[in-house]
Length: 405
Image (tube, rainbow, N blue to C red; front, top):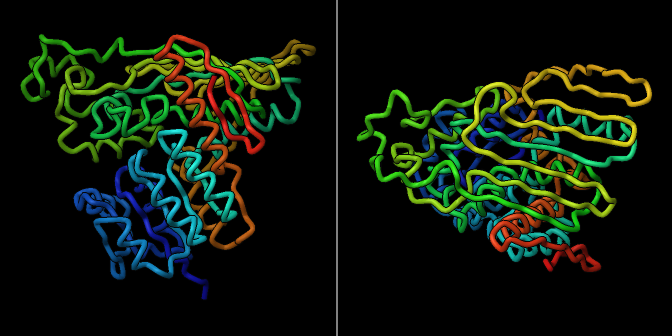
């Protein structure tokens, strides 16, 4: 009989459901404890995931779970972004494998707090950069690292977020405030900053960024709540907006609660709805990234285009193929992406990574704490650049820690 690995889930909002759904299907994993101060979140997560609750213990505070659950084999931390660091370090000190939702944290200080603990305890921790596991980005990475387009020169990437995702980012109870989410770039595109770092295989050395709010600005002609609005038939954001079904994000809207009825234009918020970021890397490569909310239709979502000295690679995340142009051969090769059974194009692979860490004490995922740290540094530097209208330079010490200049 296989061993049952005992897992706890801290933070029972929308992101926790991906883990819980998969854990419910794993013969080797039993979720024995969950923690969230909002019982409604926990109830909804359990309902959606179909976890076995016969031996499940529920807590309103992660500290109580940490104290009482003394024989855990692994833990998922999917709290709001600004609450990641304390539970992460507490379980790192117990040498328990951790699946930590992205981003790592919302500040450089908290990121270094986690990174210090990981290095001190040689911790097993994976940050939720699930895009690396998808066929789309993994295939592109393998082609670039395999030399198919020669030395990488430039990357152009974008995230054109759907109406549904835009609603979550702009109306979510904590996502709409920079102090709790880290800002739109941190909350939505820490994934993409990690992809840029991964693809270039180099450290960022300087950043320029511009951004702001041009779409979801206060409008005195509109009411505070959707229920009082006469434009419900023409507004893409009336109450429950449309999601891209391929993205797997619709579940998040179920966790907005009272926020879902507030006018997306007039709701109190301070996060950007658009931002452009240019990054210079230590190997000379340049990456340009664009984030825009309020998008739909063909070629929305994520696009990626890499240019090397020998050719180019490009594609859209929702397409079943990517294209590679060979400069010497003067031809385009269409590369079919491998089909997978995952409903989310492979972005639900991290429960398997947690299982690997629990089984093998020597296993360390590539999406580690330092990857999370560098992604955070890029997001924070981008917001600093946009806010102060200046270029931000990265200075690394001997341990890889960053200061901005």
